[in-house]
Length: 108
Image (cartoon, rainbow, N blue to C red; front, side):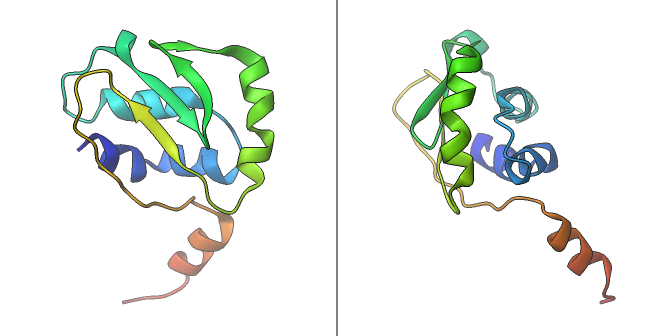
């Protein structure tokens, strides 16, 4: 449920498209996933680069290291809830101008 909420969040998708390491959008998606989460236990990585540890952002130095990650065609967002050993995988895509244009220009 958490993975799906993050993967389908339009705010997360637009941050990905913009190359913006906006970890607050991922944390906001966690908050609306409908699952009891202790935000002080959450750690977050983009492409293997730590961005949040124990609910705290790791600052501008971490954001600078993410520049290369966001240039890649694909990368992983890893969220550790700090609540056990279960895991889930979810594929998603960004929400680009082209995606919106294509999906706004046809009728079903």
